[in-house]
Length: 103
Image (tube, rainbow, N blue to C red; front, side, top):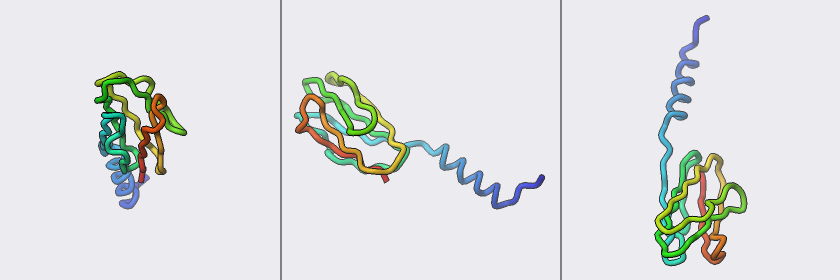
């Protein structure tokens, strides 16, 4: 059975998409705030939070996994597979809020 040129091209493009490295965006936790407070990423990318504060924090989303307790200097990463807006806060300090916009 012969593969058509269009099938080969489609498989090649799909392979490039699936093998493309995901980007990582960083968010710092410092002075009781997330910085930057809002990030915009592509589906499949990750956000890495680093606790640069002098106290523990816990990142929680209305949907999806939470970070668990983050001690000072600890990091946590979450990969976002689908598009949408994902609001989050610190469980210990609910006034600390952030947002991930996935395109």
